Length: 553
Image 1 (cartoon, one colour):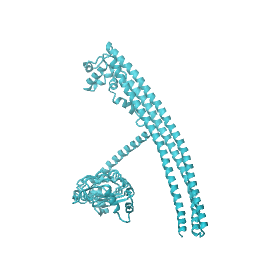
Image 2: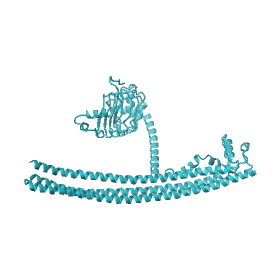
Image 3: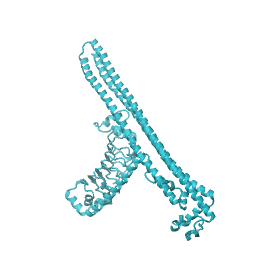
Image 4: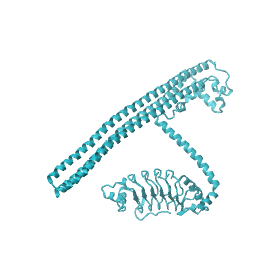
């Protein structure tokens, strides 16, 4: 199965090799003409043959962005790499190489025919992205596990499979197993699968297939659910309000708040914290719902703008086409008149006249383009004002709602501080409820808490550590005030960070959108002006060629 190194040195693809390969294409191949030009236009090459080149590593193919067919068979390639830019590739031949692992194909979503015949491959995998795969040749490799066949069930378009020459092909019921688990297969090991074989295979493996189908269905349902969740998340991100439709922000405030989590066990804090959370989540939901509504308004504004731009361009182009059609009809008659003109004076007069007609057409087309530029500039400026106003309003209202979150946090902070100080004072006076669990008193924590730690005392070995940690907060007033303050600062920081993130991303989106629209219009104008100049030059060259022929005559 292995390809031996040739007597010549192993080769790594470079630009010189690729230029030579392109240049040696068939005379009928467009690449042959390209190769003759100064600087080969790799991006225009559709088919590339690099077999029998003693290539050990794939490289330098990024310029072949429109390549459809790539032949790399009969080399000494050890690893599939360097193909990520060949997204339009349909046919790939890597047979007769030294490849051990299938990899590096994740971007080849249009690949239909893949040959890895005669390599060192022992496992079929990493082909998930090849959703259009129809032909797969893996003969003469080291594949020995039947599970590899089951992996191929995901390729619904697979019709031709070659596995002959692998250990798996020598197993009992190999063909029947393949036919059962790949029922849509038409050709196996270069032979057509008859209906009788398919029926026998279905009967023999019916129970296993039914069970597998059930598992596949459950997997598909789960994947569909995850995909729907991901799409929903992307929609929320586009509105800049992801994870604000629940308690995520609130929970994140306490995720790293060790002091706050300790203070939550003080008497009365549990109820206070729950009331705080309920109100906080309501505000987050308000931000979330408002964000989705504003996103829809921005989408409508953008769609309306695009429709206006396209309508203006189409109307302008139609006027231009109408003027060009009238000119070409007249221009054709003028050229015929010139060809029939025998008088030199009349000929020269008409040349000047017809040249002026071309200049007039140029002025008309450029005037139309300038009118379109002014029209689109006004439309773009209006859109920019509208979208900027929408974004500013969105940010202003969100900041108002975030301020309410901070107000809630400030109120909670004040109430928590009151409870903490009151607990400290009662502790120092020995006025706490005497009804504490025995194990809590055994830790020496009778100075701290009553009802709030009843649940803690039931949690096993962690109760002593937690009691000790909480007791350290109640050394004096400064300690408890600092603990409450640290918790408060962390919560405010989380709120501020989420607000800053929303504002920054929203403004960046708006700026990028407006900049892109302006740049696109500049590029459109440049392309149109270039088209006009090229067309006018062509018309003038036709006229000039007649004038030259007349002078020669």
